[in-house]
Amino acid sequence: MLRFPRGALVGLVASAYVVACSSSGAGPDTITPPEDGGATPARDGDAPPADDAGGGADASPDADAAAPLEPPTIVPGAKDRFLLTGTIVTPETVILDGQVLVEGETITCVAPNVGCAAAAGAAGATLIDTKGIIAPGLVDTHNHILFDIFDDDDWKPAQVYANHNMWPQEPRYQAMLDVKQCLVNDSQGKPAWCDQTPYGSPAGSLRCEVDKYGELKGLISGTTSIVGLPGLSAGCFSSLARSIDVSQNGLTTDHVQTSALFPPSRSSADGVCNNFTTLKTEAYLIHVGEGVDPPSLAEWTRLGTVSTDEGCLYAPQTAITHGTAFRPEEFAMMAAAGMKLTWSPRSNISLYNATTNIPAALDAGVLVSLGPDWSMGGSQNMLDEMRFAKSWSDTHWAGRLTAKDVVTMGTLNGAKVLALDTKIGRIAVGGLADIAVYGGDRNKPYDAIVGAEPKDVRLVMVGGVPLYGDKVLEPAAPTLPGCETLDVCKAPKFLCVATTSTANKLDQTYATIKATLEQALLEADALTPGDGWNFAPLTPLVKCR
Image (cartoon, rainbow, N blue to C red; front, side, top):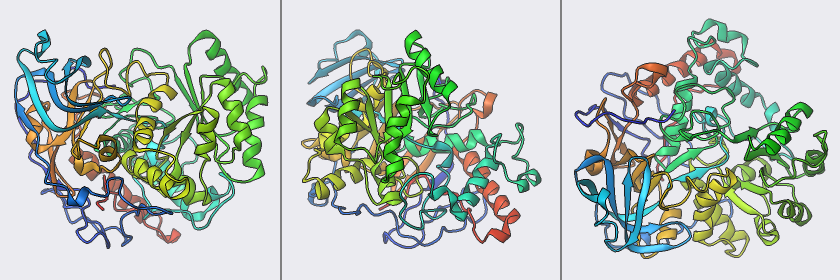
């Protein structure tokens, strides 16, 4: 359920936060609590995630030596029309100096120089000179959004594994899973202690808070669409970033199906193939080949036999998530069938000390998108995943992937995996105004995006509504019922979370969501003293490098 329309601008929620900024780059991350809250305990003292794993250089090595970046400027006007000026990454091409006109939820003009200024919709629009890079919102095609309240401090693999059936047996993972199952009131697998909490019932479930926290982690990194694999949906979903695989995604119809477990049942597989035939499903995202051993590889063959009509899942609508075990032969068959691939490199390395053979996939002609998987061993957001992917390629594949390749994987290719590339994933007339603006070297815009962090994200719009960005641009944002102020790694930002609707918890602020989740984690820890692990405090929205 996306927030259309929003109220007029008239006020401001004055809550201010510091989002996990560690000035030394090591030691515990801290969160400055809201004024009405108590002390927030520091997380265990792991350093912020490194970008090494064989690499680690920033995508823009000259960034530290670059001249200070000019801040964006704004001339307030109409609240449903915006004229953005800056360098445009479509992402197929770059317009060094250009304009993008947004009217309502739609992009109505993209032109070089001041080519949109004379358009009828530009008259009286809010004018934003971004002094930065205007790009499509990132499209995350692989996330487990209900786990995004956790990170490496809560669980990371204790050893290298051969396939996806092994690591779920780790006791600490199972303890963490129990907490998640309880908080979101999942119908299966709730621990017995959950009955002692208010969360293990439909009325007390925190599914909305957990999902919105995951959407927020994506949003502040420029991610506007997320395949979150939440299982059951709720009316609160997609009020921030689009939870693209649920019916509330703000699109006319939902044509995306997913499967996080392998193999799917025969009835499920048959249903998907029938939906292909009737055009009810245009994109089917399924985990296959996650691992490095023969059983993982054998999942490719099993995918073809799991349905009554054998081979019907070898189809253009199908996108393989992982394919870590695949050889050139499997990628050749994928390409012949028009199938696509989602790559999650950091998670692969963390679990299996190997990742998908992307050069072989590209050589075969397979389209590749990106997704961080989750934040325990995976990346905390799409920007981190893109930076990791580029670093891995530079170190292990002789720089096979250019920065443009990686940006395309994170935008347009993701939209193509979802069969939504006429709506999202590009800056084009007629597309939805899902837009991210980054600071950085406008002469190297792809490198600037790959090297960006949430503090560098100047503006994020979802469906033409500004929801996050530099504090100076807050006059563009919805003010009813109010936006909040965050300090993101020493960069002042605005964040608009609450809506004017009181249904489905849509009036919750970030402060409320955060406080609710922190209290729930403390209660869960108190009820499980014997397991030896604590899952409070809540993982921060971002860890600063």
